[in-house]
Image (cartoon, rainbow, N blue to C red; front, side, top):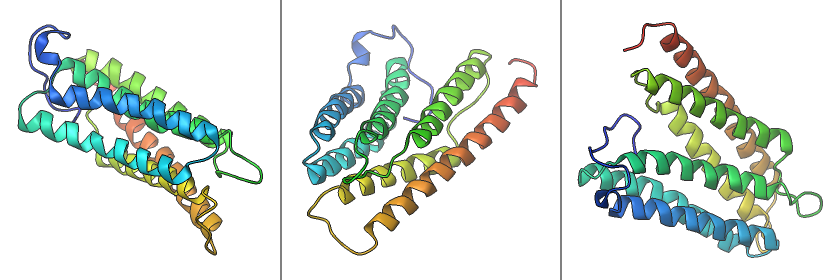
Length: 203
């Protein structure tokens, strides 16, 4: 769901909150925990990749349905970004366990950058929105999300022993580094924008 959309009025946990978009968001959270369990086994890499791609794709679906059916709620605005961060950050953290011979390519410093960026930007957004200022998602954040999802998918696929082609490690590392660069760049964009808004009077 877009950050700029206005939620409907009423109690946050009223009957209207249990709508289809929010149920899809909750199902994405459940899929995330299933994905983490699959990754921890050290097998089923192609299944894990397919599950991640499917779960990540539901993010666009619930946002589309919420806007089309005018079902944007406060609960949805809380859950949607939270679940997105759980599935992306959680998958990167889970991939940290797989290093050495069957290497995911993910390193601790990469995860620190990804998680740190999300925590800082989320805190900044909370302060700004409390002051009534618009800190909605920008295209740099959306590009970051796409590249992170792409890098996770590539990492999962290349971990499969059934996927053997020349240059798969080079491809994996290239996409990973690109996603980290996009994470740092988008974070800098958000921080610059946020500090500019903080220097202005509250709405």
